[in-house]
Length: 138
Image 1: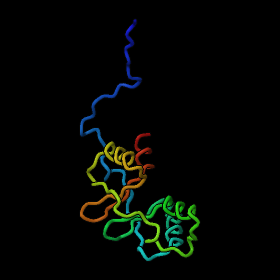
Image 2 (image 1 turned 60 degrees about the vertical axis):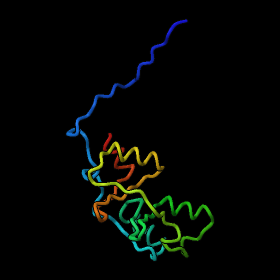
Image 3 (image 1 turned 90 degrees about the horizontal axis):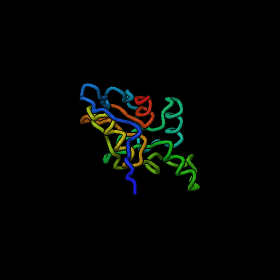
Image 4 (image 1 turned 120 degrees about the vertical axis):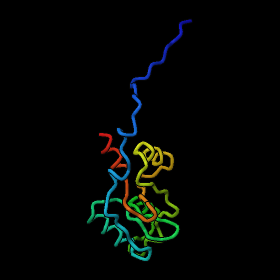
């Protein structure tokens, strides 16, 4: 029987910290926020106007409303005209530090199945999205 040697298709070279990009270099600022008692229609209007897919909801614990949250509510038969952001927002969201490497952000997004990470340095400072990650890699 012959042994088969498996060779990776792509060889990766180690990167020094000087070659690596951190969140702060690609995050979106200023951060767009919305109140928990705002209507879902207001949230979708703001997302459309700003050409973004998520807004941070300034609550404790931390929360976010994304276009996916709105789609989920509509798919469940809920009428978005009668909903507040608090009714559909995602709570206890994961966050990223501004000095986190983009590879770590990509791993977090994959692990938690998310597309947006608020960037926090004591307070909110920006947002990084899966679009930011893929744009950075291209």
